[in-house]
Image (cartoon, rainbow, N blue to C red; front, side, top):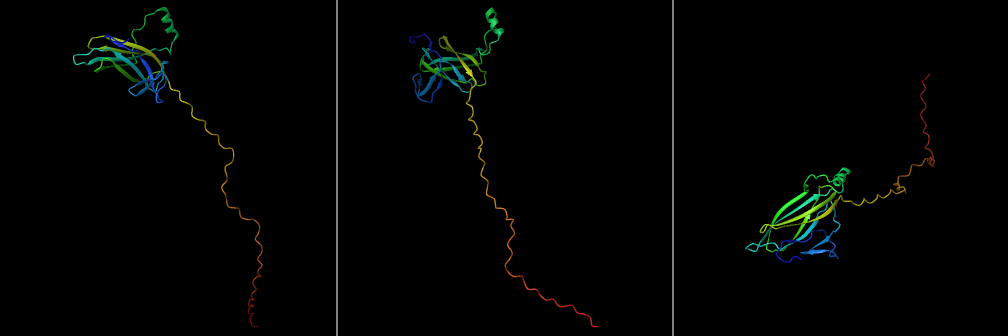
Length: 209
């Protein structure tokens, strides 16, 4: 129940954009279709949608609400658990303090309505494959009231389908190009025409005696 005057906030929904049209579990907001992902598993190279609603923001004399929105992403490091970390958690050794967020951003918003909807496209590109915790914080700058919600998700390296196998080479020989037939080795038949007549040569002159 978000009625009343106390600052309130919905749960954080992690979703992806759905281009196939409305489905049974879709979110439809201003003509955009979002498909909630309750498992919270996303590919590293694809941004996902962070959806939440804020209620009962205070308004000034002009009817304007002003608030700060901060979102922080902390690595959970569940994908890389070492024996010494397990031992430290069992024996109750002191932790190293507050974790440093992998992503952090604060923005100030002004609205003419006390109830607002937010959709944030969150990209984790460049961060390692791991479990993460997302914290969304709202501070009403007029009253100083604060509220936050948290959720967890996991980032995986994308797995692309293997390329199709190459077609094997054909076993049938390729047709040979036509080449001119070799010259015949059989001798040409003799000519049937008679040989030319012999010419009489003049006899040599003998010297007179």
